[in-house]
Each structure stands twice: as C-alpha cells, then as structure tokens.
Image 1 (cartoon, rainbow, N blue to C red):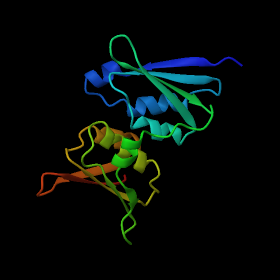
Image 2: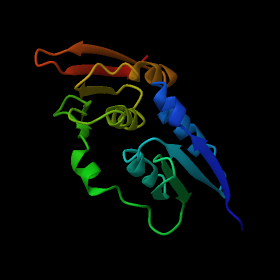
Image 3: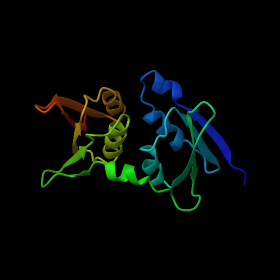
Length: 171
C-alpha cells in the first residue's frame, strides 16, 4: 500500500497571528489510514509532538531551504515518537485540584503557542460538568474563539502578580 501525503502549510496563519491548532487537528482527524501529514511551519512545533504521539503518530522534522520547518507525521510507524525532554519538563500540570473537581493547567513560563496547546489539550478531556482553571502569563486572546468552537466558555481575570487565571466550563 502506498502512502499519500497531505500537506498543510500554517506559516501564513502564524505570520498573521492566527492560531492553527484547530486547523491542524481537523486535518489530522480527516487523515485516511493510507495518508500522512506534512506540516510546514516557521518554527519546530514541539508542543504538537506529544499531542499527536498520544494519537499514535510518529514524527520526523527537518529544516527546509528558507529556514522554516517541515514535519512529517505518520500513523503507526514503530513506536510513537516521544516528546523532546525539554517539552516534557516544561509541560504544566493538568490534574484535578485537591477535592475540587477542577482541572488545573499551569501554562506560565511557556512561549506561545504552547499555553494555548496545553489548555486545548486539557479541555479535550473535560467532562460535561467539568471545570478547568488555566494560569498563564498573558491574557489568552486566541483561546476564546477556540473554546467557543468546542462549546466552552472562558472568563479571564488578571492576578495581582500580573499573571492571568481563566476559568473554563461548558456553555
């Protein structure tokens, strides 16, 4: 069986300030068994590696002639690729807070788009009555549209230390 390549170029999205995560995930969800994804991005999308590894994708990366990145995601080839060690170390917790039933995601200290990816990863498993509290260094402006697409609502408050806490729940 020959493998077909689906190419997704998100470079212009990122240059225009648009978050490509949901577009990438829609493309991945639409891949047939005989298709692999070739993703073009202006940087190595390391936060995406563990997300797709959990879905059974391995990856290979490389720089292309203009300095941008080309990442190949292929389903079921050997063991799923493990995330780079520094991503694993930097990954915020996404666990229920003590006895509150609220999932906590601490995405402080991460560079965009990592906070958005971590939060969307956590809300993907949020039960209908669940709540999530996300802590970030910046107001998560790109998050609100992503939440609305998923039937969720987020309210953000600035904290006295300059960080932000966003409470997320189903609409």
